[in-house]
Image: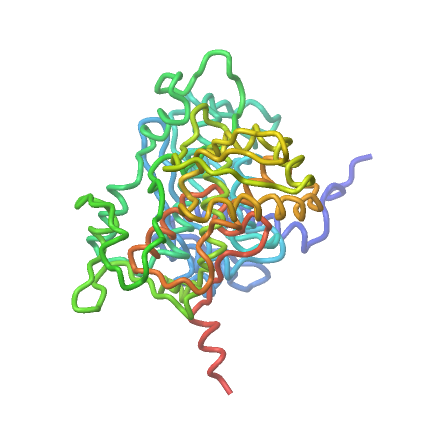
Length: 455
């Protein structure tokens, strides 16, 4: 026998569902005046406002000035919305919203994608606020994949997911790392950032504008953004006083256009400083960012090396004179085992009898004169990494190579060299952790710094 209310849960649970519905409507329609009362108490009184103010009115003053806007308009989809600063992320879910054509929906992969990006940033599983709006032609959206029409499917899932990933990462990177920008610097960033149509063509050159590629249904891997707009190599062989040695010679390079050395003072829209010749410091919108220069460069070389092992013709710098390198029995056996990977990395090695080899060329990241030492130390580091089963042989040798060729702590860097490290780091697949999972950067908010001065 049916009894009224028998399917209802507790009052607190039902009230929570009601508030969620109100929040969803309020975010999707910010021009509407909304007022909510319960038991004679005003819960919400929301006048028309922009999205940022509406979020603050709904969820609290802690979000004021702690929201990261993002927007990207393309011929296929428009992506816009707000993310919260990782510093105000919460331990539980509840403030994550996704809209397609202003209709609240669920998309498990997009949700997982955004949360995984934040997990990379903060190093732990917490849940940021986000309101993600996708505006897309209704004919490109299937709303019948769920009985209650809560979930949707796009006819070009791959492009929507990959563009969302690119937009979210770019917004986070600029907010957390890029210093307060002048109008000119903002325009430089926009000019240097690839458009979605360029990104779409790069990701899937065999598809039409709609993204339908024959014979490849479903989702593919994420884009390798480091191939889009990344300097090829940083030359750290000069001393800090050798001012012109690190220049590429290209007067149109982004580094030269952003900053100049004038009377020992750097004039730029993006300023970086070195602390104790170990850390790169930058004032950001929310506070201060500290980057470990060694770990940052190690991440850059690690990903570059992995990419080289996938290419048919790796980059190799030929030695002026071939060198004979001698090994002990254990290292020579390991060298033979790893030889195919080493050659794909850019080493030109010919094995000889008697536990020796001829070295004719090395990867571009090795300073000439140090190649034998690097090769020997790589093999030793590789053995140490065999204790890490999560790394396959290719990743172990790439990590060993990166750890031995990255710029060391204690190396004085020019401002343009610091910029190049940051440029390359934030073009990496995972810029927040080194190959061994250790943090590369730390963000200190103004509030955290101010707390240290309070008695």
